[in-house]
Amino acid sequence: MYCPKCKAEYVDEITVCPNCNLKLVKKLSENPADDFVEFVTILKTGNQAITAIAKSILDEAEIKYFATGEHMQGVFGMGLGFAPSATFGEVEIKVSKEDREIAEKLLEDLKNEE
Ligand SMILES: [Zn+2]
Image (cartoon, rainbow, N blue to C red; front, side, top):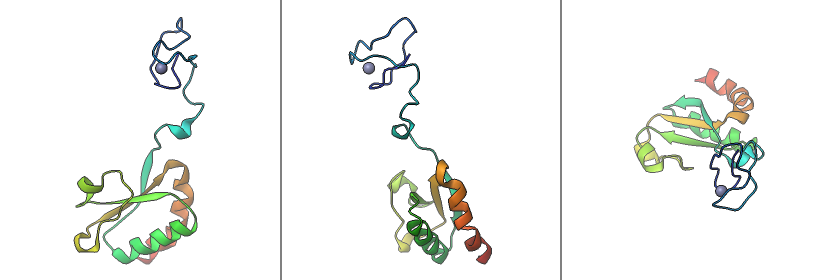
């Protein structure tokens, strides 16, 4: 049993979370969107032009993404940020697992151009 608020796990005999005073649920999957979303890399390139085009394609398709530059990873971490061009290294564009298929399809032509 799980508490929907603090997400603590309890044995089956317990039905109410002693911390939150909330009824426990069997699974936390009732609102999976609130849980962490897994991101996968769909494009990895050191070519700034390719990255820019990929960004605009994803923007247009309204797909959420973020990019990590190898040299900036420590600074941006999981944030939504692009490395400034001055320190532009190899960049990975990541999308959530749900969007992976459509995003890969959209960027297929782009990869062929490179
Ligand atoms: Zn709780």
